[in-house]
Amino acid sequence: MSASVAVDPTSRRTFLKQSALAGAAFGFPAVLRAANPNSRVQLATIGVSGQGFTDIHNFAAHQKVAYVGFCDIDTANFDKADKTVAGVPHFTDFRLMFEQLGDKVDAVSVAIPDHMHALVGITAMQRGKHLYCQKPLAQTVWECRQMQRWAKKKNLVTQMGNQGHSSTEYRTATRLIREGAIGKIKEVHCWCPLTGNERTRRLEPPAPAPVPAGVNWDLWLGSAPYRPFAPSVYHPFAWRDWQDFGGGAALGDFGCHLLDPVFTALDLQAPLTVAADNSGINRQVWPVMQTVHYEFAGTAFTAGKTLAVTWSDGGLRPDRKLAALPADVQLPNLGSLFIGETGTMVLPHIAGPRLYPREHFADFKYPRDLKGLNHWHRWIDGILGGPPTTAGFDYAAPLSEAVQLGNIATRVCLPPPPQRGSNTQRARDVNTLRWDSANLRFTNHDAATALVTKPYRAGWVVPAA
Ligand SMILES: NC(=O)c1ccc[n+]([C@@H]2O[C@H](COP(=O)([O-])OP(=O)(O)OC[C@H]3O[C@@H](n4cnc5c(N)ncnc54)[C@H](O)[C@@H]3O)[C@@H](O)[C@H]2O)c1
Image (tube, rainbow, N blue to C red; front, side, top):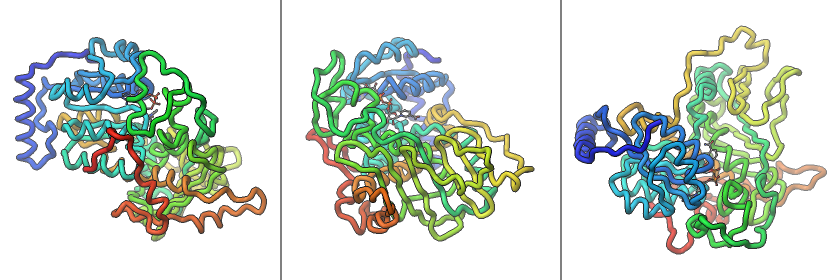
């Protein structure tokens, strides 16, 4: 673990200049291509507990990282971060941190609730900071697109925090699909057992309560519509359940993990259509159970002109018969199922892929040569001129947009079908949203198009690229 170290500003400036020149000469982006062994990436993390703590732990283990800032709206959280890297300056307000640190920061990692990813991330990118942002990239489709555009405009090295992407298991699975182990893919299912309001089990906000000492509630709310503080239902962690802050404990939280190998293996881009069924939704929290039906344009790795991808949560999951599983094998609790022309792949999150029917693959040699990459270090190495990141925003934005399109379909979903004589097919037909990705609109549903973005609290508007 590297401690917070002082970097000689003169040698640093020379290094950055040399790197930029080298980059320009070779047509590289303005990253630090001419590696100077003495240079470090000066890093600040915004949101230092929860996943932020895991991120700090991983970044601090990189020899070339020098931490220059910890930022959190809850001062109680600094103690634990300080035990990982001592002596790092503390900030409560990310805007003041950028103002005070100026050029002392090269790169920023963001691990705060989803509703503030775009504002904080874009504030960093506008200032030329390389960005590691937790998944999903942002809370709305429009924000995801702006994150991608700002990264491109400023020529930055980016990585989304869907670390499973770099795991041996997911890398092996995507390779098997791309090498045709089960033929071209006809259909995909992803499922997660969590419910949309898993953390609070509420339908409406509770009574207000005083804000605890050390918490800056106004900064926590940021761009979201004002609401009073209440304990245990927003900060920390439980914010996911609320439409104003997260994307549901299931799709918003796990969509970028479980759909990730599907996007990577099949080269998916924006869906053509999206539709959803659910167990009932109000304007506050996410539904207990939902299914989202995506249709994507076919690719070199799919069997048809289009590909159906189905997301299920809250205990819903695909029929195990689809997987051609032997009687003694269960579907995993959460994961993906690829149905190919010549077999199926079950990919648990995160464990090794398995191919079925068993008898077809009895002699199959699963590759053992793919090693996991360090998702966090890959970003630091990318900044220092190493290989490109694996989940940069050109990849992460379309993936996150698909997650948020599913959330839109859920929000405009028809009322749940009757219990008996079930009618989910009817709901789907009536409510299929046709997505025009280039123009960020649905061609057949104005109310859904209105949800592509969100209203911002005065003073907290996300700037378009
Ligand atoms: N990659 C993964 O496996 C993984 C796992 C969990 C969470 N996440 C993602 O990480 C992010 C954070 O989730 P979490 O579960 O850690 O949430 P959390 O609420 O537990 O922690 C968020 C942290 O950010 C701080 N914070 C909140 N708003 C802030 C602001 N405006 N400025 C500075 N600090 C702020 C909080 O005080 C807290 O320390 C989310 O986007 C989530 O989706 C990713």
